Each structure stands twice: as structure tokens, then as C-alpha cells.
Amino acid sequence: MDNNKNVVYRLGSNCELDDIVVGNTYEVKVQGFAKFGTFVYLNGHIKGLIHVSNVKSDHKEGEILYVYVNNIRDNGNIDLEEVVVKGNYEVKTQQCQKSSTRLCDLKNKVGRNINLNAEVAQIKQTSGPTIFTLIDETGSESAAAFIEAGKRAYPEVELGDMISVSGEVMMRNGQLQIEVSYMEVLTDEEKEQVRERIAKATEERAKPQDIPFLIESDVLEKLKPEMQKVAQILRKAIFTNQPVILRHHADADGIVAAVSVEKAILALIREEGGDMDAENHLFKRAPSKAPFYEIEDITRDLDFALRDNVRFGQKMPLILMMDNGSTEEDEASYRMAKVYDLSIVVVDHHHPDKSTDQYLQAHVNPYHVGGDFGVTAGMLGAELARMINPAIEDDIKHFPAVAAVGDRSEAPERKKYLDLVEDKYSEEDCKDIALALDYEQFWLRFNDGKEIVKDILNVNNNTERHKKLVALLVKEANLAIEEQLKTSLPHVKDSIIENGSHLFTIDVEMFAHRFTFPPPGKTSGEIHDLLCRKNEGKPVVTLGIGPDFAVIRSRGVLMNIPQMVRELREEIDGGGVNGGGHLVVGSIKFVEGMRDVVVERLIKKIGKFPVE
Image 1 (tube, rainbow, N blue to C red):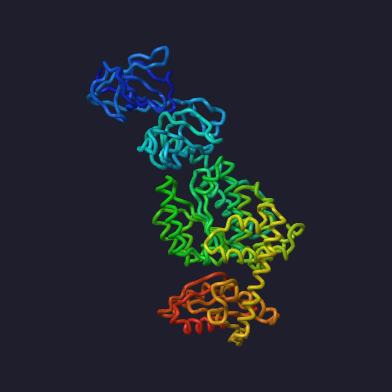
Image 2 (image 1 turned 90 degrees about the vertical axis):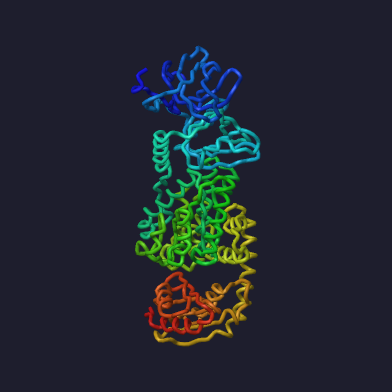
């Protein structure tokens, strides 16, 4: 043979026995040994034998050899001879234009041997086999590979690899599973083709349906493209087995927004064939006390994600922020997330800071299209959930109305969402549900209270239990609020500030019950509502002041809380000022020793704003 024309073929993963040419030289991988010779794989599913008489030297399992094809017998056995190729030679991948099995077709191939190309989305070592979660353009399924109990099979295969798999399709505990006979990482040329094919098809499959909103709304229509983008990102995450961590503000609006999306995502996981284990690993909902992503929150999320990455071979998660995430207060946590290349998407209605967008893959916020906080996160969340999975619409149709009254929206969308469900839920019903959520979440602290929250929102469709539970929680909440108001109101101070508005201040640290419901923010809000009713038609500002914070509630004063926070931070040396919220509802933090300075300067700034 002319050494300048030596060609070694690498058999493509889709090639079959009849694609092998007698007289050609092939690259193979050692699979095992017997007294009569060495078994090798020519690709992921075609095995041949080098008879002991044709073996040139000692080899190890997994070693790459070159073999010459002497013969292919009628029974399919391939006679091979080891060769040492010298001089100049070229390795060519022999591509065979035959379609491999798709994961969506496995249900029709139970008991049969198949081969397919897929991406490794998860690698989980059990006490028995190694379980690989595979994805292609049609779905995801599991493949089990066993060497010995608790030992990692195919250690060369890593998370995110494009592989060729051969094996028998079986049913295990009611779930499809491939019993792997062989697995190999595709060549660079092959994996790029498979990666591109899967990515293109998954992007297309993840596109949400173009469905109308539950109500007519100019703001929602303008937000629709960005909402569809978020829906596609979330659907793609589920289709590619990427976990989703949903962070949300721990109030009625944030809970409603998050539970809407939670229900849509979990239903989609189940549609994809996922079980309870998959739901627990692929989705986590976590309330945040503050209306922004605190360092404590990102630290918890990273800790869980990194543990799951190590223990269960999972991808790093996508982070979804709801009813928080739009302000510069979030950015410290975003910078930490970026160290681990975490993707972040935000659905919020707090006044946004432009600087946050550099950290985000997508950002839905009504302020971006001329709207304001009146289009609440709960409204956005319910509509987003329908885009992710339209089948859940009936279960969450009342959610936006609950969010609207719970967050005191005065936008035109409020009435439209209330009218939509008035046959089942009155406005008072929605207010009761919102209060019950606030009350129960206070005691849940950082827990999601998944099943209790479902009952409060009547997601479980146990209407009798829902009504009893909401009635009980509302009664307890109102008793607690009455007790708090009875204690606090005598200590409220009234003054008239520069713009003519009433300023009511209350020290919620000294003159309110601590560590119980209602918390300082809710206490300030209840006092504010009561004083607004007593001063009908007048501009009113209420400050609930603590040792290192101030809660701001306003009616009729056109203030801008995020702007005030930025100005105070720059103007007061050593004040440690930060905070945020909506334009007229929010909170400010500072160091305790600078409380008097910060509060005095804050009140002066409030007095400079115009009144309605």
C-alpha cells in the first residue's frame, strides 16, 4: 500500500453493518477480552472480533486501535486483523445518512435494540447503575449503564456531551429506560451536527403559542414580545433538563405570580414524562423577604445548585425573579450569579434601573412600555404561565384579581380581572385570599408552603377546605391587625410638611409588637390606610420608622422613592442608605446611628415633591 494514500475510516454513529467495506482499515475501541481474541467496537453499536492470531500486541479496555476488515460473515460476525499504520495517513469519518431513533419514538420500541444520538443533560450515580438523562430535539429519557454496583459507568462521558448510545428499550417502574450496551462521545464533527440539530429544533419547540390575554390591556400587549421571550426561555429550560429556581417577593402579589408559573412549569415537566423526583430536582420556588435579591438569597441558591450539580450531575439552574429583580439593589447578587454563568430572567413591576439589564437574559416590566406598578407581578405571572402551558388557565384565572386587590392596584386592569371571575370570586373573596396569603407567608418565613398555599388559592379544587382555611386565616390576621393598631395608633405623630401633605410617623420598633404579624411594613400600611380614610381627599404620607429602616406609604404625593434612595446615599456620608420599591411605596435602610439624620433629610425630600 502506498503510505501517502493510507486512509483510516472512523465509522459514524448512524452506520450499520452493511456500511462496512471489506478491505478498508477502521478505527476501533477495545471493549473486552476473551481467550480467543479481543472484542472491539467500530461505532456505538457494531461489535467485531480480532482473533487472537491477528492481535499484534497487548491492549487495555478503551484503547484505540486500527483494524483491517478481512471478512463479514453471513451471520454478521466481522473478522478483523490489527494493523499498524505507518507513514502519512488520513482519518476520515464515514458518515451514513440513516436516521437514528428519536427519544419520542422509544415508546414504540420497547424490547428492541436501538441506537441514537443525544445530549447528556444529567448524570446521576445510584447504588446500582449510572443513570444518564438524555435529550434530543423531541424530548428527554433516561439511560441506565451498569458496570458494577455503585461504580460510575462511562466516566469519560460528561454533562453536556453529545453522545452515541446503543441499548435495549425497557420499562422500569412504569418509565421508559434504555439499558445501555454501549456509549461513546461523538467526534467533533459529529457532535456539532447533533448539537446544532437539537438546539434548532428545541428553540422551535420551546416557542409559546400566540394566545390572547385574559383581558384587553395596552400595557400587556406592548409587553407581549418580552413575555413570550421569557416563556420560551423557561420552556427551553424544561425541555433541556435545566433546573429553574424561582425567587419571588413574599407577599400576596409575589406569591400569586410565582404559583402561577410554578403550576405551568410542573405541568410541563409531567407532560415531558417527569415524575415527582424530576419535579423536585428541576424546579424550586423560594420566597424572598425583601423586594430584591439579597446576598443571603443568592448564597442559598448557589449552595443548593452546586450540591445538586455534584450529587445529582445536574446542570446549573436558570434563575427567574418575580415581583423583584429590577433594581440596582439586586445587582450585587447578580454579579455573584454571573461568576457561575447563571442565566437570570426578571418579571417585575417595581421601578427599574437601567443598569440591571446588563445582567439579565430577559426583563419584563410595565415601566419599559409606559405602564407602572398598577400592572402587578401577579397579573404578569398568570399571563406568562398561560404562555408556558395554556392547559392550566382555568386553575389560575382568578389569580390576577387576587394580586390586583392584594397589591392595591388602581390600574384599569384591576377591574377587568375582577370582572373576569366575579361569578366565582367576589372582590371581597379576592381580598380575603390576599390577606390569608400574607398572613400565612409570615409564619412560613423562607418556606414556600406549597400545599397550604395551594389550598388558600383553591388550586387543589377542594372548595370547602379552601373557604374554611381562608376564613380562619383572615379572622386570625384581622385580630392581629386590630391588636397592632390598638397598640400603635396612640403613638402616631401628625405634621404638615412643605408641600402641604399630612405626614404621619410611627416608631414601629418602640410602639408596635415585634416578631409577630403584622410585620413593620404591613403595620405601616394598615395605619396608612386608616389615616387615608380619616383624611379623605388630602395628600397623606406615612412613615413607619425602625432603628435602621423606614417604611414609606403615600397617597397623593408624586414622590420617587428609588430617586430619593440614590440621592440620600450620595448626600449622607456614613449613612449606609439603600432600599427601593415602587415610586410611592417602598422602604429605606440605613445604619442605626444615622437614623435621625437620614429620616430628617428624607422628610425634607418628600416635602419637595408635588401633590395631586
